[in-house]
Length: 69
Image 1 (cartoon, helix red, strand yellow):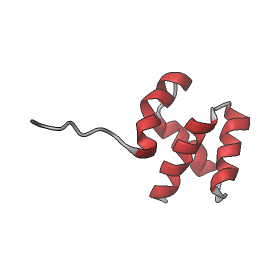
Image 2 (tube, helix red, strand yellow):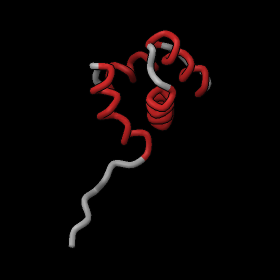
Image 3 (cartoon, one colour):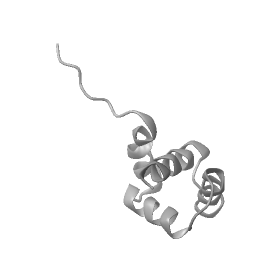
């Protein structure tokens, strides 16, 4: 039996984010980069207020972004 590699963590939200908001993940990573250095929840709040993302989607994007920083 082979086990398929299932995406875990923040990246597991990426297909839903792209489908819901119609923009690729690279777009959102650019938005976060352009926001400049901020704390995690400040970035989440920015995505929610300025781009109308849901909390879970915004949190997943910020977590993935900061993990690569």
